[in-house]
Image (cartoon, rainbow, N blue to C red):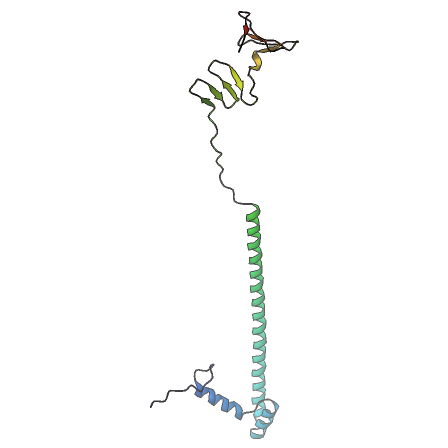
Amino acid sequence: MAISSINAASATSSNWLKEAQDAIAASESAGGLLGTLADARNDPGSLKTVLARSQNISNSLAMISQNTLASAGALAIQMSDAAAQKRQDELATRAQKLNPQQTNFTPPAGLDPVIYFEDGTSIDTTSNIMTLANGRQIDTTTGLEYHEPGSILSMANGAYLDTKNNILTTADGTKIDTVTGLVITV
């Protein structure tokens, strides 16, 4: 029957034998003031060793403090950069909402300037005048008969003369052909 290997070392060390030897060596030499006194009893030149150890420990503590300070500064810069980037993104989003990107506007195609019908009637869409097949013109916005402003002579009693068509319209609405003198009925 085969026995499977068991790893007795801690999870932080890949060489458990070396870790065990270092732990044994560390337990044999006491540190601090007691270690200094023990070393002084065994070796008269141990003061030099104690001072060297103290200096190494002091250097290690200073290095730890310096690394902590540098890491804290780097973290502060990193957090500051992240906050600035977030603020910049928020401003860009807000600006995009308030000022949307302009797109080219193509106005819809309007009406033709003149629309012709099968019966001969036409509508001038720019001046809103419908001309019937018999020549009579109607203002499409009001529905009233249209007369060119330059061809109308207004009279004091409310009558008016259409010089283009030679028709006199009296105040009561009677229309008279000025060439023939006949009353026109519609």
